[in-house]
Image 1 (tube, rainbow, N blue to C red):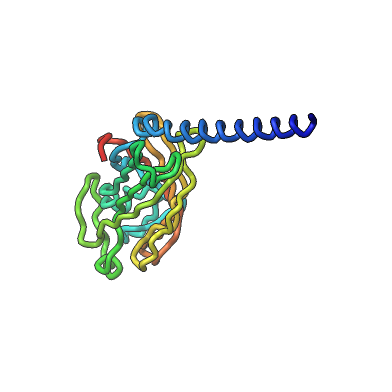
Image 2 (cartoon, rainbow, N blue to C red; image 1 turned 30 degrees about the vertical axis):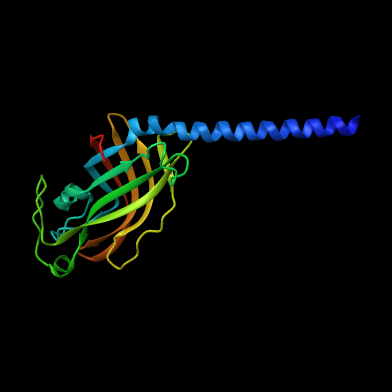
Length: 204
């Protein structure tokens, strides 16, 4: 009798774990419509600040506000794509993160004169836009992410060192924190950068 009770208890526990696992998986997949509404889309840069003051335009003045140092950064944008329910190659609460950022080219590395900084997007021969793609996973709060599972492309040109986190703020603004290399008047520096991006299109 005791053996029968133990067997029944074991089967019951196994069934509960199985049902809990199914519910958890369904819940996580069902997060996608909510995440799609909150995050999916294209975002334009509205601010970018470095933890370390830098001189990017050779004028001898260092600043933490990168838009005072290099107006080409205004071309930076990010895209966040939340998968449809039938896209099972992405795991629960995962998303595709794409970033465009101006990368210093050979012209910039040789340039010694002061570079003009504009208050609007103005293309410069000193920079090329460079793209990075990551697979991120939202935290349990579904408003932030700190886990990314792809290696950063280390091709000798990429200036992104680490994608640390992103957070959803008010008014469809996302805060992105990265570690990046910047070329300054005094050479290369590696610094943490906090940028704010605002969604301008829900379509990717």
